[in-house]
Length: 115
Image (cartoon, rainbow, N blue to C red; front, top):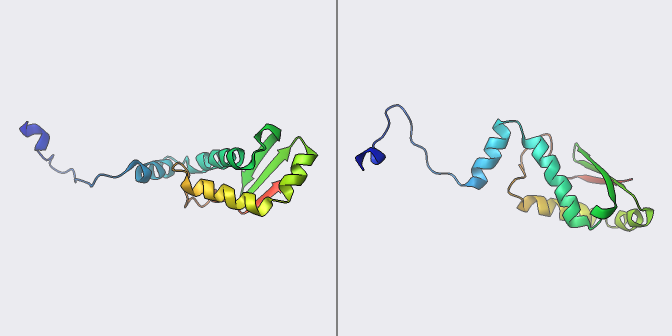
């Protein structure tokens, strides 16, 4: 029982962190944040747009989300809601625990481009 409470010499003791704090640090340290963020943006598009069945391709870089759709009718309807979709995607991402919010390469969506 005494061994559990013994301090190890030379090893500083740290305060416990929550997983919400540890995961973004781990993703940054392992240089995975950009890839994970891109996948989270794609998941946010699928969840928010309602057009995942019509989505042929997605590409995300520099705050711009490019989405290729199979239906011109769906594209026309979504084109009218671009600003609302960007706001909804960013709201979804802000609640996502895996999304690294302060990543310099792939942050929140600034612009939506439909093709």
